[in-house]
Image (tube, rainbow, N blue to C red; front, side, top):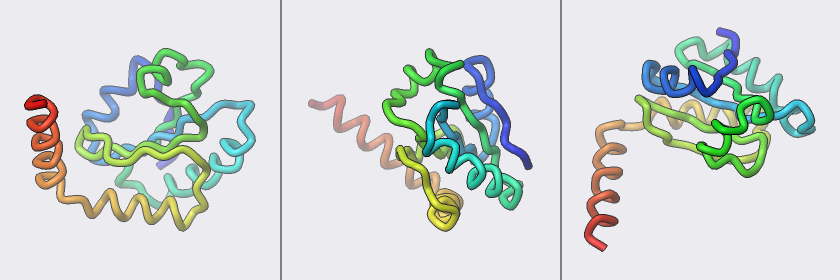
Length: 125
């Protein structure tokens, strides 16, 4: 499956309606983004169970601000609507595949339990 462009209008719906979504935050002027782009695209062709989205931070400045993007490229991974990975920097193909494998292997019941526990702890302080 090829990558798809995500915008302020499509981002939330895409993340919430798909099991796994990887998002590449990038800009045309960014050298490392240009290096990572083909790696991300190639991975989208071999992992057809995952939605691969790209957000142009220049065209979608509001969305990038809301996502607190401070460095590009930044890769985010969402599983069942939950942000489970976020890291700036261009990844080589083996590292990207490792992230994908780890996201696939997550026990989402455990992840949600940890989130709930963290929320309870912050509400008590």
